[in-house]
Length: 244
Image (cartoon, rainbow, N blue to C red; front, side, top):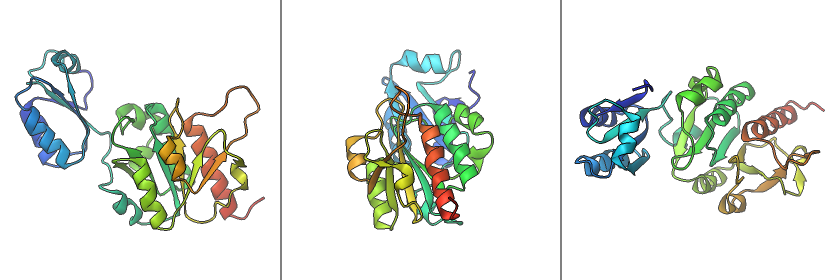
């Protein structure tokens, strides 16, 4: 296998799941004898599992006796839950939530920004989004091992938890009426940034306390997720330091 973080075969994958290793995703052939078992093991740990044609597993693990199952280890372990992230040390009062960011380079750049700005952690969805892949870790340039990352069932549900805990939820949207520097970012703030193509989902927008925009002078309506996250985070840092 060309990806050193892939493991193949029912016993290696089973052992990784049972032992609590940082498994990012599992692929199982739809005709594999271990499909039910893998669904149970992955589901118990809330790890994404995709049922695919056997040729897809063959392509992931060419020439390997994979028995219809392949798993990918995360480049770094995830925080177990959002509650654990919020209870962690430091509590600088800054969080990033990424709503459907699929590009590993964007995730890696967000992690690097988060470390530089003192962000407490990054929240990503378990499904239909990129995880802590080797590509993301490489772009993060070491920050992937420094910034806590937690996967949640859905960003919209996580926003309800954060609001109950007293966080101000600020979403980035190109059509928002307020400019990002006009918002009060001195309370504990959770910034929500959307994916590369669709931006914030409707439900996520509705659950934000405030939507802000980054003014664009050109014809492109928005920046990519990592650049938007950097502008938001360092505006919060500026406001908290009381600098003009």
